[in-house]
Length: 110
Length: 122
Figure 1 (tube, rainbow over the protein chains, first blue to last red):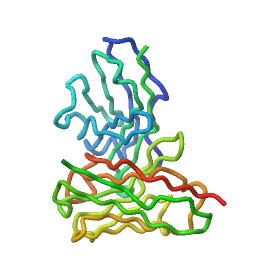
Figure 2 (figure 1 turned 90 degrees about the vertical axis):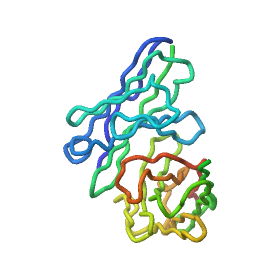
Figure 3 (figure 1 turned 180 degrees about the vertical axis):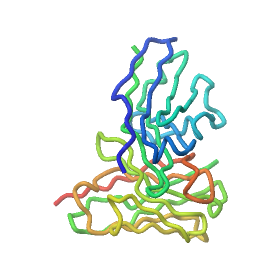
């Protein structure tokens, strides 16, 4: 099972919106709405930001939103803030291989 | 408050073995599937293994199948992974994570430990 494909880096200025894509296949992202997004700051554990493609866990800012179309899932961060600078990973349920993560995207706030 | 605390990470020689533990608290441990996720230095996340809430169902990434064994003791609220035939490429921080449901099929890992470092080197 290959990792889901994400852009290596995305950047934006404070207050702007950015979108991170996550491209899978018909065996994972395309077959299930079980896509999650995680934020990871340097030296810290990952934190769940989005699950089931569009849902936010309790306590997660509504500046974070998710969507999915076909084999591509996306994470949008609106009103970009300095604290959003981190690595972001998507993941998907993939049946036989259970879970697969994306390659990761480094978000830089300019 | 959900807490997950990994332990057992160490410097191990190639070909050696190691058992990692993850002590859970703050939730009904047996009601949740659990997973191990690793991260090699400077690299991305890799899901390694998962186990259902009862311990009856186990799942492994192809990269570790046959060398890793996941297990749990619900009476001790503890998750384990036994790692055999260690290779240099197994060097990573190993995180335990709580699944959002009873089986390893929700796609969401909603709580994570702080990680335990395994270094494989001679």
